[in-house]
Length: 475
Ligand code: GLU
Image (spheres, rainbow, N blue to C red):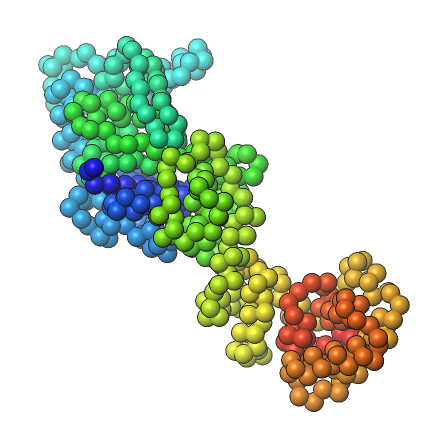
């Protein structure tokens, strides 16, 4: 088999939607499963959508996720340049070849004429297709108009009869009637290619064996295949990926909260967990396992097991997977993704390093992503805690007041404030009050934290400090 080569071909918009990142992951996995190459190609032919620094942003994102390209703008191989705006002469050369072969033609139609055609199509409620007006201009007329400097585009001359078919790995056989294929623009009047042209030229010249991209290109692919056929080029294997929807069933977008990788990263999600989660968006592994390292994904990934139906981006599941990875972090890794959020939210000036370390570590198994540390630790940073009805009901039970008074005395008696002595105080309170189990721990927890659940009670009490604990027990 020829070498497997796949590519991720984003437009540099300065934003990495998780759906885009999923395309990158799948392209990476197909390449690496087959010991192949993974390329990054920047598709910047829409000059109106350029964003400063967007290429670095894409490269950083891929590197953070471990999806380092073998070739790309920062790692040129033998197939460069890897940025489409640096390849304009290549597209022009191939467009000329198509014209010579009669597979493309100059079109001089102006905006006014095209607008009229569009309006007519709208009125008739049929999809707008360019009507081929310029398809049969004489050589002389073309030469004159070019000489006069008239604006033009180059259009693909599409067959009008019969059907076009191809096989997609995910969607199976795709059939389109040729009369529905538009004589699409290949080169725009500014000399830039359209995506529709550049993707074919580049995928061929870069020897891409498998094209992996969103399914919005599924029905346009027959047009691309006609370009391959015109040049006599071998077509790649096509793997179109199902859409990613939000929980409301609509296409995932910025509306759905953290649908951008950087937002997730900034909130303290772990790239390896995000990659793991996104790999399951539309792909079902053969086992029931759901937690996979990148190496395991490379080993098990099989594009034949990608589903056609839209995948649902489920934040709860992402959190579950992320929490799983959080539990394995070293203390330093954990500090790195939590402390900046604490610093942002609270005044830590009177807290020492040990205190912060201990705080973060007792919550390691209680949070699903870094920023969540802020909410769960609020009780350490406020003067007053308020109790909900459930907590109040619990405290109104017989014997609770007595227990709290006893415990308060034991806490007052502690000379050396440490977890062991706090533990001892709880044991003494148990013996003296006769309360045990839930009736021992819960009232104390509620009084000092305002909550019914949380990390180990002695640790929590220790971090709150003797004064605050006494204050809260007094209230
Ligand atoms: N630039 C296209 C996009 O961002 C790439 C599609 C493809 O992978 O061919 O949608």
